[in-house]
Image (cartoon, rainbow, N blue to C red; front, side, top):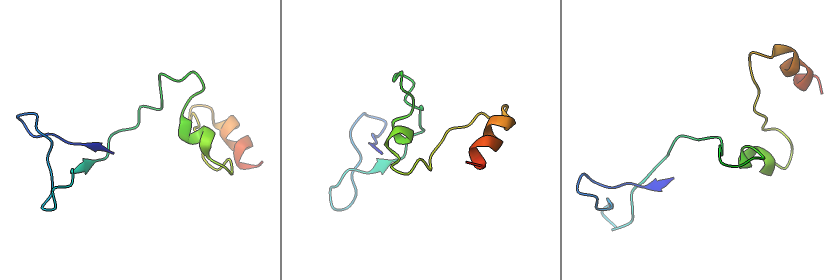
Length: 64
């Protein structure tokens, strides 16, 4: 979530003067050699990025 700005570059706020936040698209932590930090931080291994062009690997992961 990031604070958004209006066309003049000023931060937009709600009626309570709190910054308005907007979800941003995930960049998969491209700058991190270890990959997406959300995947590394998942305590149960439930979050895994898969390449759907490699369905055999996906099937093996499902059967674990």
